[in-house]
Length: 401
Picture 1: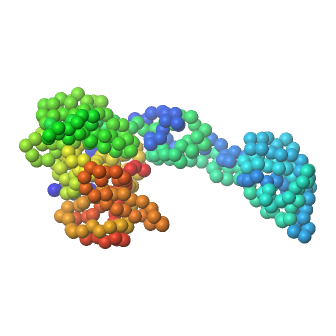
Picture 2: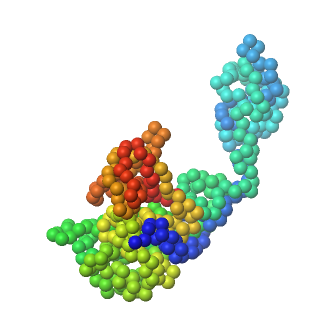
Picture 3: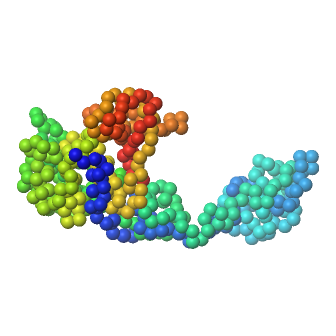
């Protein structure tokens, strides 16, 4: 039986080239991946400015200021953020200045209001100030032409700041892979129907759609299909040209109605692997057809969830142009017992958080209600265990970077 890393290698080797390059407005680029380097079109800050509200002055004017010998300067103006100084600070003069306002000619430091006293047109200072104190110098954060973001970076909130800073209104990004989602099984009914005997509501479509979106892909619903080889084949043929990846759930095991492998073969696809040495998610059929990957995931929500995280998420991220498609791993400390040793790799749905500076993780248990709050998977290698609270384990975050 194939190991997880072997299966993932086969998937990534067969992956199509990353998406086409498209141009998008920066306010519509969240979770896209950059297809170009982003450079600063000017110095930042674009001018030398005050870090705080205070007095702009010449530092040499206060070299002899002491509590016993305060020095007094004449206040000649007030500068607000966005204002443009049309005066010069000469010896013996100062100006009130607000945070972010440009420093007037002649000034080389700012004294905060709380370290001065003033009345009318005069301000008094009891301490010296150093040259360039409380100033943000022109270009100290980024010089014109410096790279702000590199191709392959995923655009999140912080990256959005730098896109706006660059002066660009549109940027080049890689298109998002379209991922077809089909749920199979005679027992499956829509979420809005009331299940009778032998029927269950479709949950996998919505679970997979959210996983696709958080991976950077676009979900494309192929609908529900009965346990009919012809019906499943028909739906795939009808939609395969509209998507980049296809995922199905159900029919991936070895029972009488488990048809997915035969479906893929009937479509002329090359089956890459049929089972993986992992639980849940062992019954994962993966095939390759005309540059596209087809995944037959377990009908079990837990099995489908885990297999998606192990194989489909990194595929989507790679296809989207991300350079960090395998960087979702971390080490955390358990908050509970995990008993026993397992004959295959195990993944437990988990919630991981930071408490008192430590990354802590706990298993969410079994059943559909346990999906609430899941943001990671605890990985237990084959043959390892048991584990006690405080032991370190590897985790896989169920989100993308």
